[in-house]
Length: 448
Image 1 (cartoon, one colour):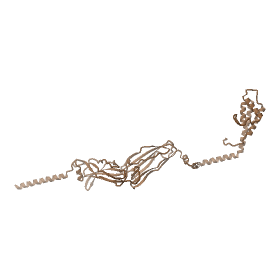
Image 2: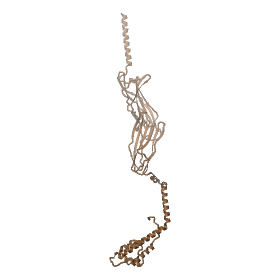
Image 3: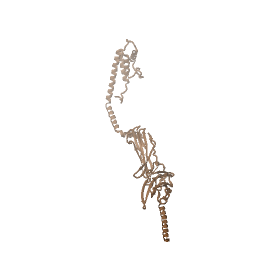
Image 4: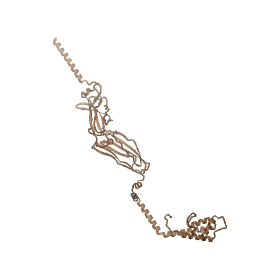
């Protein structure tokens, strides 16, 4: 009987120990509380890795700050990076989606989420990434959700100026950068005053941000009205190499106001090449366009009169040769026929005198004395208002006849008249006067 009781008691004690052991095992294997994520962290089931890709970077150089959360339990919500503020630093979150994956590490399956900050230090010195509280949300086996935050440790990095005595605002820092120019019409076209042409400067900087791009300064140009449009900046993400390129486009429209050469000045920008760690320059050479006739303007563009004449002769020498041959031929022809020309003009003058003499006699016969007076003036080669010696140079008899003719010009008498003898006497005196006053023949180039 006692033996039976002892056996029963031992069996009850064994059951009790089994219950206690089961409870302990259950407690050990039980997942963390839904409101306490620190248990997952302390058990090593939730980790946070923060890494800076580069150290000792240049001012304005892109620094990648990677944030990775690892958990042995699946994530419920996507990783959301908190706001990060670092003095004298431009901070931008990667605009791409959070990278999610699952991988096995030392036989344990881990779920990961990875995102990135881009940091751009704006001055030289030491910088500190402060503690980050990264919110996380994981699912337990019982389909409960544990939410909370995991905290990082501060990280330090340094930045330095690549070269001294340089304007930071105008500095470009990148492994690859390009500066180019394009126009809406070829600059070799023929331009006239009033025409317009638009030039577009394009700056592309890899691994940078549009906030860091310097401005492109386009100075005023003589003889041109400039219209500068606001610069257009944007970030262009390349999905193939997963990198960002900052671009700037600056347009300027030129309204041509004067003839001549118009020169868009050379553009140079300072670039620190992070691949070679050398200071380089981005350059667009000066662009030239011609307004008006280039040949004519080139011949007049020099300040030296000798060079202007020389250029003009070099360009139009064949016209000068033709003109010289023509002048020489004409001079030779005139020289060879000079005596013939003298006789021709003398005969022509005599013929004209004979016609006027006949005309004068007819006007006297018809008593048209006013016309006869005009004939005398023409024969004498003078006008009624002339201050010459006519008629004072005539002999007394001819003067009396001349005065009589003037009186009859204004007389109403029909009985008085100039006789034929008087007509011949006055005409002879006038012809004699004309011969005495005749000047030697001189050739006039204006004669036809």
